[in-house]
Amino acid sequence: METKYLIIGNSIAGVSCIEGIRSIDNVGKIVVVSKEDIQNYSRPLISYYLAGKISENSMAFRSAEFYKENSIELILNVTALSIDTKNNTLITNTGNIRFEKLLIASGGSPIVPNIQGYSKDIQGIFTFTSFSEAKKLKKYVEEEKIDNAVILGGGLIGLKCAEGLLEHNIKIHMVELSDRLLSSTLDKDASNFIETVLMEKGCVVYKNDTIENIYSENNKISKVKLKSGKEIETKLLVIAVGVKPETSFVKDTGIQCNRGILVDQFMKTNISNIFAAGDVAEGKNLITEKSSLIAIWPVAARQGKIAGINMAGGSAVYEGMFPMNAVEIAGVPVISFGITAVDNLENYEILKKSDGKTYKKIVLHNNKIVGSIFLGKIERSGIYAGLIKNQINVAEFKSFLLEEDFGLLILPEKYRKHIVVGDGIEV
Amino acid sequence: MVKPKRIIIKEEYCIGCRLCEIYCVTKHSCAKEIIKMYKEKKIASESGICFEEKGSISFAIQCRHCDDAPCLEACITGAMFRDKDTGRVLHNKEKCVGCWMCVMVCPVGVVKISQSEKRVASKCDLCIDREFPACVENCPNEAIYVVDYEGKKITKE
Ligand SMILES: Cc1cc2nc3c(=O)[nH]c(=O)nc-3n(C[C@H](O)[C@H](O)[C@H](O)COP(=O)(O)OP(=O)(O)OC[C@H]3O[C@@H](n4cnc5c(N)ncnc54)[C@H](O)[C@@H]3O)c2cc1C
Image 1 (spheres, protein in one colour):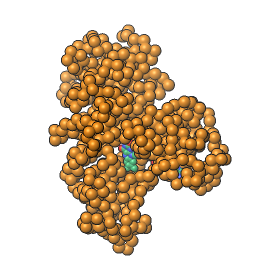
Image 2 (cartoon, rainbow over the protein chains, first blue to last red; image 1 turned 90 degrees about the vertical axis):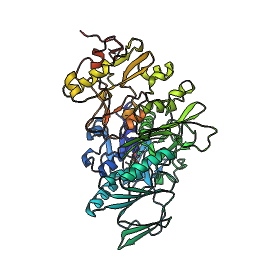
Image 3 (tube, helix red, strand yellow; image 1 turned 180 degrees about the horizontal axis):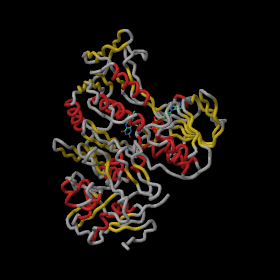
Image 4 (spheres, rainbow over the protein chains, first blue to last red; image 1 turned 135 degrees about the vertical axis):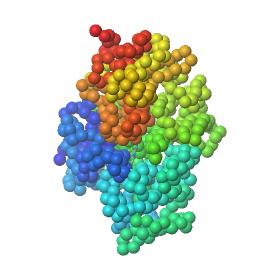
């Protein structure tokens, strides 16, 4: 098989690449391969599915018409095995595909740490990153009438899974290695808030702890033992310690990888006709300027689109990314950006405010915002993200940053006009 | 891409009366009538408008329907979409699950959380079924007005 454009991965980065290509090239053939068996679904929605809040047929973020309208040849159930970069050929388990331009948007795969007693054949142990896993988990929960579960990992995926399980009235034991929940995006105060709401819902959190041993009977999980010594009887364990870039098929191809596939600001790899985007790609963090993995949906969407435009001969530059996160736990919404917890207070200035129900924190470095947390009240927080991204000096209006009615009005007129203007609009 | 009409803001003309909010909520209420709307207990925070005031300056701002809209990319359900016929950025409340990605990425900060029925995102739709957005029509001092895709002011009649 031959194609002009080949995309590995049919999730948000792959789909956005299609949109990028088609904004420039309406006719060039596009082939998309995915190892999953479903035409389209949104990965972040799997926790809503588990919770029973949405049905299987509401999982798509793009309709069947999308693929038709864009003349996409979508090949499902195909796994990329390697890339012959000299001959521009993708090797898959069902045959070879020659391409002119390739996008690698293979996302991430769940990390399963080495735990004594673990075997993938034991029933009742799940990871939680794909729709097929979510379906199996939901079925298991319902059929086995699960009323208590252990989740290993208190990051985004662990919390999302907890939210889903709580809807089934399951008592949850959450085990987290670090000293707080969502440790990569929240500080201790915000994390404590979340822990309190979770506890009210019947979730117990074990911090600074991990699972040391998994016990099973007749190939079914029966118990876990924590490092702290605590033993918890359970028929369900969800391993949610994170994802790693899915780069297994890139090995020995000459494509440069660190933890993820290294890309430049055009989303190009070290090989000129091969691009990468989304959770599999590693690029510069706008705030720390370090090479980073930022595995979130909006980043994958933007990167995919930029890659698509460049693959089709256009010229688009990725402005760069920084971590951001939105979750709602037991009715309490939390949004965070950038660096939210700092040890070295000499270089940073911290503004914070809390009234027991809401919490707001701004981290400044040289009068620029480098991070923030909004808990309980999240409306208008996007304005702060804009200030971070555009590296606006906030010295003049610093005292307003924590104000209840913070808005565009207090921003410097020039910046305010810039964001409000969009296209020929004045303020 | 079809370009949407846009609402222009003239902060120096805004007298801070907040009628724009009242008429926005009324228009988007079931009753579509002020008194009944009040009885429906719809509140100003349900409007598509963010009203800002500091000292003597005030203005009303609503979704900019950006050409390169970050909320469209960030939406995990496809609830936020670009209307092909009008170029507007619209939001399907049925599809929305309230993940707040759009709230997180909107640099203008104009995606709100709906307080009624379902907890989902909520924003200006430029009054999809009328020529003139309700806020603009009821602004007594032309502090907000509408322009077409070429930037030409649209006037009534
Ligand atoms: C439970 C959960 C909740 C989340 N919630 C949020 C959230 O609220 N907000 C947020 O911003 N992010 C969230 N995320 C993260 C978000 O889902 C990812 O950032 C996003 O899906 C990344 O998109 P992607 O296109 O890069 O890769 P992925 O979505 O991982 O998709 C990868 C694609 O590649 C295919 N593929 C992989 N390997 C191969 C191969 N060898 N051959 C062929 N095909 C292959 C897969 O089948 C798939 O189609 C969540 C993730 C999870 C798991």
